[in-house]
Each structure stands twice: as C-alpha cells, then as structure tokens.
Amino acid sequence: MNHSRLALLVLCAAPLAACSATAATNASQALDTRPFPRLAAQVADGPVLVEARYYLDHKRTFGAELPREARVLPVALKLGLAPGAAGSARIDPDQAGARLYLPDGTVLASKFQAAVWTEFKSVNDLVAANALQSRVLPPWSAAGESFVYFVLGEAGEVFVRRGELTLGAGEDARSFALADALIAFELELDGQVRTLFVGLEVGNGAPRGN
Amino acid sequence: MRTLLVYLALFSAAAGAVGCAAGRPVPTREILAGELAQAREAQQRDDAQRALELASGVLSNTRAADTDSAALRFEAAMLAARVHLRAASETPFLREPRASGVPGPSAVAHSMAAARCFELARRCASAAQRGGANAVAAELELANYAELAFHSQLGLGASCNAFLQRAPGLANAKSAAERFARPELARQRAWLYLALFEHVRNRDELEAYRFAVLAIEESSAARGFDVRRVARLERWIASEATLEFHCPKCDLLVAPGLRACPNDRTPNAEFVGRKRL
Image (tube, helix red, strand yellow):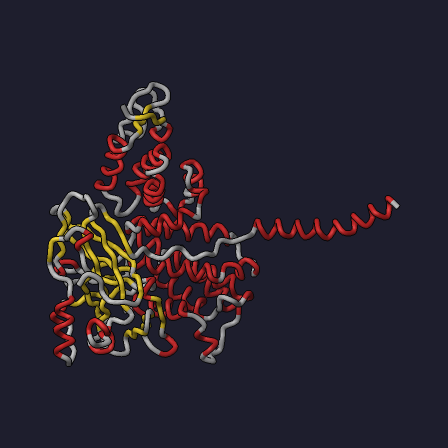
C-alpha cells in the first residue's frame, strides 16, 4: 500500500518538477521589454519650470486647423519660475531657436508668428495674439500658455492627424506619436544662455491662463 | 543628400511591414543575414551611413512578430542604435536648425533616433530570443541605460525617476557601477550617475554622495557634462547636504575637487557621512 502511494506520488511529482524546472528556465530568460518612460512633458531646470502641450482641438483656439491651413504645428508652452526660486529668466522667441525633434531624428524648425499666414484674417490675428512673446518669466503661479509654431514644410511632406505625425507618403511614409517628440529652445537665465528640453503632452482642452 | 536618403530609408523601415504588404519580393533570410554582416563590417570601419543603410534594409524586410527573422531584426535595430549613439557622442551627421539660421550637427537628433531603434529592438526581443539571438537581455539592459543617460542629459527628471523606480538594482552605487562597467557606456556614465544622484538625494544622502563622486569622476568623458554641473555637485557635497563626508581612516573632511584623501589616498567614494554640525 505504501509502495503504491509512493509510486503515485512520484508519478504526480515528476511532471510538476519538470514544470517547475521549465518555469525557472523561463524566469531566468525573462526579458524586460517595457518601453522606456516617455520624455517628460513638464521639466524643472534650476529655477525654470516648463510645460509643453499639443492641443488636438486647437481649432477651438485659432478657428482653423493650422497644420492644414498654415502648414505649422502649434505647440503651447508654459514657462515660469519655480516657487521661491531666486534668479531671473528671460525668453525671446527670435533668439530661442525653438525646434521639435521627431523620434527618427528629423528636426522641425519654428517659425516667427508674423510668418504664419492663412487666408483668414481672424485666424492670423489669433495666431499673433497667442504667440510666445519676448518676456521675463513670471512666477509659475502667474504663468499662462503661449504658442510656438513648428514648420511642417510643403503639403505632402508632413501630415498631422490627431496625435500622430506622418513624414513622406506611400510605401516610404513613417508615422510617429507626437507624444514621443522632444522640444528644445534657448532662454537666458541670470545672463547666461541655457538650452531647455521638454517632452510633449498631447491632449484635449483649451490653453490655460490666456 | 546621401545622409538624408539613408535616414529616410532607415525609418521608413522602422514604420514597419512595408515590403511584404506592398507585394515586393522579400529577400531570403540568407540575403538579410549577409546584409547584416556587411552592416557590421561598415560599423567596424566607421562608415556610419553605410551601416545604417544596410541595417535599414534588414529592418524593412523583417517583421517584429516573425520569429524566423526576429533575431536579424533585433540585431539590425541594435546595430543602428549603436551607430547613432556613437555619432551622438563623437561626430553627429544629422542636422538641426539653429537660431542663427545655419543648421548645425545634432547629437540630440542622433540620440532620438537611437531611442527609436531601441524601441524597435524591444518589440521583437522576445521573438528574437526564441529565434536564437544572443545576449538579448544584456542588449536590452544597454538600451535602457543609454536612454536613461539621454534623459538625464536633457534634464528630464520625471522620466529618469519613472525608470529608476522600476530598476531597484541601481539604487546602490556599487551595483550600479558594476552594471555600468560596459565599455559602450563610457561616455554616458556621468549622466547615469547624475540621474541616480537626483533620484536618491532627498532620501539617502550617503548613497547620493557616492553617485555624485562617481559622476564627477566620469565627467571628463561625457559630452556636455560641463563645469557648471560639476560645480553644482561639488557644492552639494561641500555645503548643501545635511551630512558631511569624512575619510574613514584619518577623518579628514572631503575635498570634492580631489579624487581621494590627500593623507592616505582613500578614494572619495569610500568616505563616510555624519551629521553636519
């Protein structure tokens, strides 16, 4: 009786042991294939805080789809000084050299707001009114969003749909989530030129603080 | 122009699945393996653009989910990432617009492209391992560290911290130094230690001190790790930390500008902390 129980136990245990050995092997080969966290869309660099956002429904702000009507991508920047921060920071859009890096290494330049043009005067006025202006950075609590405009080139070169940007066309087209893009620009902090980098948040809503 | 073509080719491939869907003849596995071998040779003779061109051919003719070709795809993606990383730290050939109006070489563009290649590699890593690719786990670890260094260099603290929270093995300076010993990370180490310093400085000052010392020691090899950053770390060690750091043998207070105790050559990283008086 004892022998038959022992035999039964061995028969049951053998596959379990084999299973357990396989599991151990699999565990030892387990791979961490999780994507690296996205580029942060809010950044603190010393006393300067910056946030960047692309509004999917920016037509509510400008009255037009700017990628289609003006071949630019409007990105809202919020810039301010951290609470209690000492120091003085200033941004001048003419000197900031704002640029947008896509995940494949393509880099889009920004355009002065005066050069952003549509056939609708009301849209052009809103583009100018919402553009980032030369200014000393306010405290973060008083900061609002203003826009920089990235050049999309000729129609057919770059296509924007919802939160995705496509370069090229046909078989060679390649698409990227705008949330994987990176923005850089220069500003002056205590008299020194500094380059700031920030990821891009993509979302709905209207610009805050305007 | 050639740069642009190479570059377009590589990432049209990355967009995925093009050749097969378009009904073009798909090269055999042997042909793709041959192209990958040529890409490796081009990489070894520092012909970055040719290496990328060949790697792009392999990427455009393989799919992430196809176990048969996943190993080739994985290796091509990692090779392309390495080429971009090297270009970023040595001789960037991608360009970016400048405020002056004259485009200049862009290390950041290469780092973005490398990150994209790492992501392509991650997507086929499991299939690649099943398909017999070597050292997949180690390659993915390299990808993570290279991206961490990039985010650290950009000053993106939130994404660095998000990664470090899921990498507890790096919270200790000794184990981090072992993991970062790979030669490919020589130019990134200072940025990696800086990320770790920022991650732990508010909860473990002794470990933060060690990361700061290691970052200072590695700073000369790291592109863009300027004197301002070194000075900031030295200032934290000398006056901003709530601990002060002493030689365990002679009790001398640390001099952040030196690498070791001037009395007995004990390395700064081995100093001990005690409450500042």
